[in-house]
Length: 83
Ligand SMILES: [Zn+2]
Image (cartoon, helix red, strand yellow):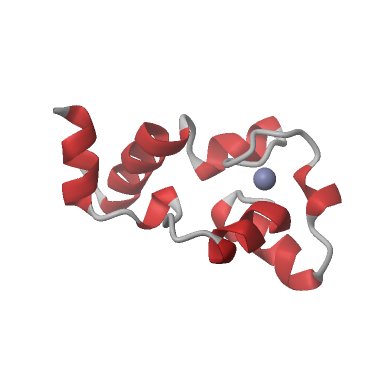
């Protein structure tokens, strides 16, 4: 399993889809709402959707809440969910 596969597996585990799948479906990987670019209010937000598949509103909420974004969860945390 290469790193991208590993990240995809983690992401699918925690978010139900990968960033690529979110882009393909045209939804936010986090809130799953369609047209995520309409919720990106800055150039940074649009870039963030490109990178993480997350709309800017979810990305902003990330920093308002202590809960970490699923893709950055440690492998140990992912294993716990499987058990
Ligand atoms: Zn969102």
